[in-house]
Length: 150
Image (cartoon, rainbow, N blue to C red):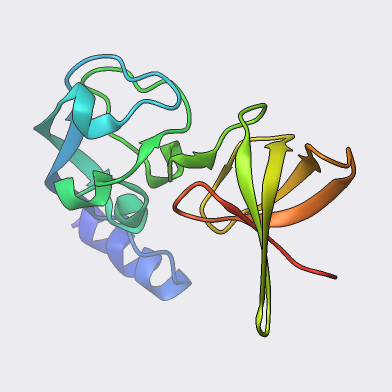
């Protein structure tokens, strides 16, 4: 009787009890260090009780790990949060990359040295090897950097 009274009181006050889902989540089979591909290191499914409102924070399908690397060290048998993952870098700081400038009817290429690592679609500062000038561009999936006149 008392439990039912507490549930009614919680419902009246708008504080519904949190429900937990018993669900299989993917966990690393071994330690995964930052920058390593999670699937390459191996994953297994383990069952966990996860609060319903937190379920969207976790990797629930193996496909969610495709083309993703660890942002931080992941420990074996621990659920993987989506915030623990990132896309791999397409350009690496200090490693020469091709710079591409496109305009209507014009294509200019050159070499540059990225000042930081970046994934596809990320803004990156890069030093032009020929002029020494630092410019901004956008890292592309193929490892090139698109620069613009702005």
